[in-house]
Length: 382
Image 1: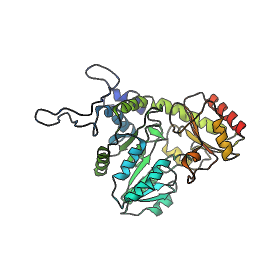
Image 2: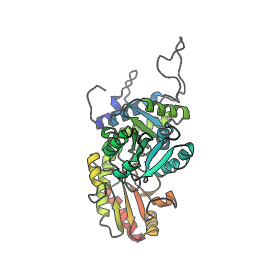
Image 3: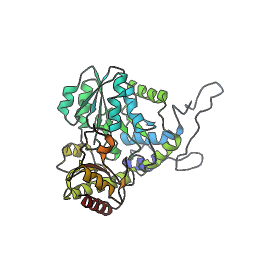
Image 4: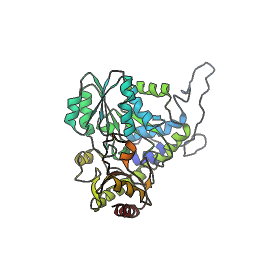
C-alpha cells in the first residue's frame, strides 16, 4: 500500500493492500515452515531463522494491527493469556504492579496466584477511581499499571489519559486490555498508553474459531525487547494457520463491530424498560457510571458487550439463560453469534460479579429477533 494515510477501515479490509509479488494473489499465504535456510556464508540475509521467533504468516496481521493502533510493533501470541502474562513476566521479581479489582477472571487469578509466588508485588485497585490509583502508586517501585476498559463483565470505564499521566510521573508503564473496545472504538496508544493488549480470540478474529492474543507497543524500547524475549523463550507463539485466520477476521473487523455496537446500544435501551430487568450495564447509556469518560475516549460506539441484572435473582437469571433459542449459552464473546452467560457461575464463589447478572455478547443476528428471544426467556423465567 502507498504511504497515503489511509483510514482504518481501508487498512483492515485491504490487509494493508497486500499483493503477492509472484502470483498477484490478494490473500496472504500460509507459511507452515518451522525453519529457514542459511546463506552460503552462514548468515541469514533474509532475516528469518526459526519460526518460534518469526514466521512470514505473522507479518500482515501484525503490521495491520500496528497500523490500526498507531503503534510501532505488534506481537502475536497463542492466546490472550499468553499475551497478557508476557507483559508481567518481562518485569523483575519484587516489582510493584497495580491491577484492576474488576478484570478478566483468568488473568486476575494468575496475577494473585502464580505471579505473586514468582515475586511480583500485585496490588488490586479500583482503576476507575483516579484518586485511588494515585494513592496506590509507589514512585520508583511501581513498574506497571494494567487496566481493562470497558472491564469485563460490569463494563467499568477507566480514564486512559489520566492513568497514563500518573503512570509516567511515577516511572511506570501503562498497559491497556482493549479487547472489548477494539481499534474500531478506541486507540489507547493515542491516549498515552504504552502497550495495548487484545484477546484476539474475541473481536479481532470474530468467528469463534481461533485462540489468539496480541500486544502492540507505542515504541520499540528495552521493555518491549524484554517482552519479545519472553515470547521467544517461553514459546507462546501463534500457529501459522491461526495467524492466517486472524488476518481473515481483521478484514471484516469494522463492519462487524460497528453492527454489534449499534445493536448492543439498542438492546441496552430496550432492556432498560423491561419489567424483569433491574439494571442494564452498558457504557453507552447516559446514566451509566463512566459514560462521560467513555464518550470522550471511545468513538463511533461503546462496544458489543452489555450485562443485565435480573430482578428476581440468581435462579431466575440462570433459568432465563436456559430458555433462550437464538442466544447461545456459552463462554466467550465477540463472535458473529450472540452468547449469553451467567458469569458468577463461571467465576465461582470468590467472584465480585452479582449473582443475578447475565453477560450478553451481541452477534450479527436480527436485532428484533435477539430482543424477542431475550424477552420471552426473561418473562418465562420470572
